[in-house]
Amino acid sequence: MSDKLAVLPQYLLPKLALTSLAGKAASWQGGALTTRMIRRFIQRYGVNMAEAANPDPASYPTFNEFFTRALKAGARPIANADYVSPVDGAISQLGPIAGDQIFQAKGHAYSTTALLGGGAARARLYESGHFATLYLSPRDYHRIHMPCAGRLVRMVHVPGELFSVNPVTARGVPGLFARNERVVCHFEADFGPFVLVLVGATIVGSMATVWHGVVNPPRPGALRAWEYSGADAIWLEKGAEMGRFLLGSTVVLLFPADTIVLNPAWQAAGPIRMGEAMGMRA
Image (cartoon, rainbow, N blue to C red; front, side, top):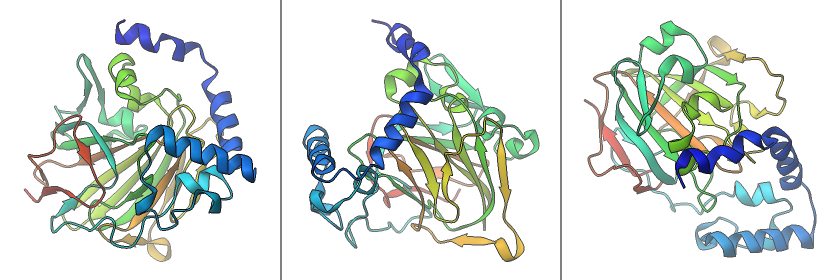
């Protein structure tokens, strides 16, 4: 079956209704039923609870608290590199941005402007730069950390679709990461700007940041933006937690030209762990 045929049912599914229902179920305090659901999830996906700060499945009152569990201190050492992986997961794609086009999969690309939810001037900062698209599977650790130190400048919640973001869907849905709902975080580092985008997906109940809390819901259907400066300025160190997915999805990173040399060991489909070396200064 072709990838386009494989994803056809996703165009027909009531994705928002399913996602809202999943979000309610994941935040339900169901006692023994919640514990049973968590144990089945651990078994099905091979979740490594030995590295969790709290390894007891019965201690989590909701599925969301289990899913966004913290790790033991030292479980993810931060590499001595200029840029580190912000997540556990797998590399969907990475490499140079071709003008303003970001490679998604064979035959598919999307523009930096579309990904950022508009704003051609901001998007031009990343022309001919570099990107990395990182996929978090259900078994992964789902907190997101800073790839380098930076000051938060702007956050934008971009409404959109809620397609799955697995590899089959990435190959079958044009412009997937610029079509799905997402939270775009603009930072300023000592080398210049960079962007970290949290991309939503089917069943992803919500996305949250450490400075704002849960960003969605609500889902008003219109773009929302927050500016951070002066007394509202927020500085985060490399490796610091910046957000989390309440059920998993994808992170897209954008860097300007001549600011990063990506780790040559990083290749599409390869596994990654938060804190490992992602690249060095150009």
